[in-house]
Image 1 (cartoon, helix red, strand yellow):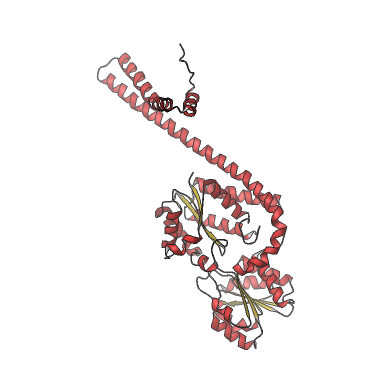
Image 2 (image 1 turned 120 degrees about the horizontal axis):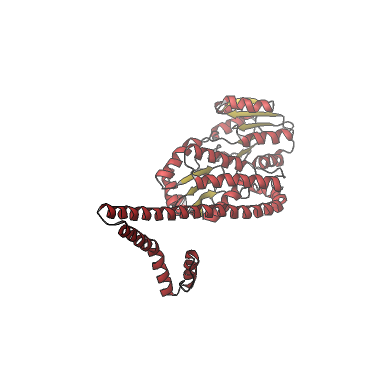
Length: 420
């Protein structure tokens, strides 16, 4: 089958490693084509989020091949990646994808955002013509499993997410939001969730900053907020008590200098910051400033842990569903393997038949009688068809491999004594 799930995540690698091998959306098509043509994968898809970068492939590539490819693509030394990666083969790869899609491998147990991100990865791989029958079927089957887990368990019942954790942490700093202003950088799903949680906690005002001012307006309007461009952040930063950032920018959008200036204008009133992005949106040096509380996605883990307990029983149910569905997918793979073997066997027999028939006709064309041509055809065809099974059976008997002897006997429908 040769399925592999390869990559690293928040459990195996710190944020500074993850951000170095994250794939921007604009680079995914070229990366997929390079995996297919350069690394030799038959099919491939790449899932790249703030918490994980994973390659799913139907391929003969092994862990070392993929480490080398990943390092080369991102222009990094192999030893900068190798200690942090994992590779799962075949059944374990199938199980891993299903667990990831169901939120069982997430920092926030059961979080729903990852399923949407996997669907996006599937769409990108489809558009890049990087999917085929096996990986395409696996992703579609995985989506059905994730839907079943959401329907049949309470895995998503508790309001726990990275966004919720960020807002909950801000509450521990400020307590009351009624006089607070939040600056949200980005306009994606996570930022929208943050805005909803903040509004539900009584936030006074929200400012949305985004590279696309139109998207910023669209989000800000939903919460009665102000929309600004990324270049306007230094002008408005001093108004923000809370800053939450999650963009796809390859470079930081908020630097130490801008934060220092904002603190002067605020007369040292503190600012709570959460950088959810990978690569990071806020320069790490900002954490060195007094009156700044800066957290990354890794720091949120302790906040998230409390909400995990309520989902533990649901996660056990989800694992049972996944175990069953992994078995179903493996059955499908085995059926495909059997169908291919049957197709190959029939083709081999037909090639043999056509060759012997051609030679028999040639004998007749050369003046041989029909009886001689028929005798040649029957004798030659019989010898060719029984040649390989005879060799296998003889070798199995000579080596004492009774299991193989009985298998051949069963396949060929043989009795121990030839019929008279």
